Image (cartoon, rainbow, N blue to C red):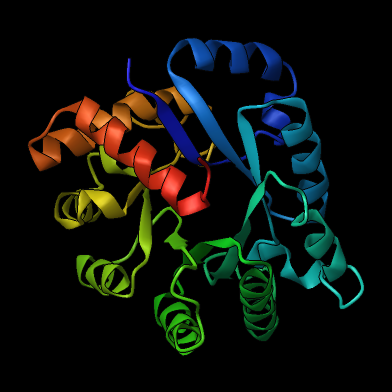
Length: 260
């Protein structure tokens, strides 16, 4: 069985409180050998530190989601910096812009997006970008940052949802695209086109668990072993085998996060 690397999940979410331990055992039996637990807010940073200390196969990302960026101050921003010193904290994320919910003022979102990008550069960490209904502003910020981004700094567009044209632009900039359950949806035609066109060496498999479960589990709680269905769909779109997808995306994820 080929190994699975879930590059983006939220196992600190309360939806896992009742059976987290049993689920981790089940997942490993089904080939899931590495997971990145991604923070969404400062409480999530603390919870992620706890999880990565307890479970050897879990690694972490520390950062604040745009919806929660209003909680950040110059003082508590240091919580993220301190967390990133942990040897198993491999990325800053998830950070970015979200104009769908618009729960934080856009200028505040932009300020802390840029501050967290600069922190990732300073700490030599990969970056996980969240962007929803904010395509142009996200691209503008990242293009401006690109001029000072170190060559070896890896960035992924998490849960990519924009056009195939913009996907090509991000790949040309050296970025990766996170692909998950949406690629299996009947109405996910744009995502299917992106998955078919983007080079395999630029794709990271992700669940965003507990959200965005693939067909046939759409609407239910998502978890990492369900990436088998995502890999099968990408394989069908590219005309290759599921094993080829799993092997390539495992190598991509190890390279992206700098995990041997």
